Amino acid sequence: MAWIPIVAWGAALLIAAVLLGFCAYEVSWKAKRLQRDLAALQGLAEQADQLRGQLTTVQERLAATGLR
Image 1 (cartoon, one colour):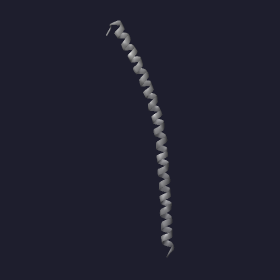
Image 2 (cartoon, helix red, strand yellow):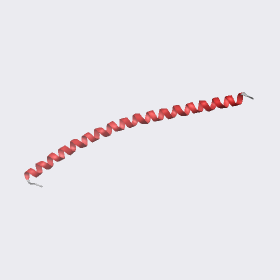
Image 3 (spheres, rainbow, N blue to C red):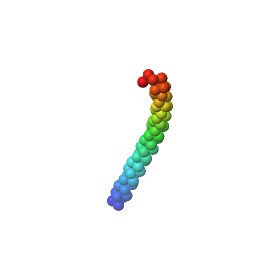
Image 4 (spheres, rainbow, N blue to C red):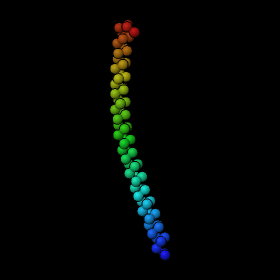
């Protein structure tokens, strides 16, 4: 009967290892996804900056022609 606690502790350690491994996988996967999303958002921010510059140029041209 002394083997029952040993088996129970072994099963608990196995379950804990599986859960920790799964959590590590999830964190790693989500971190990679967030890095990918961040890169995409940075690209959109660059495009928005370019568009802002173009709009500023158009506003300056309109102000210079007096059509505003």
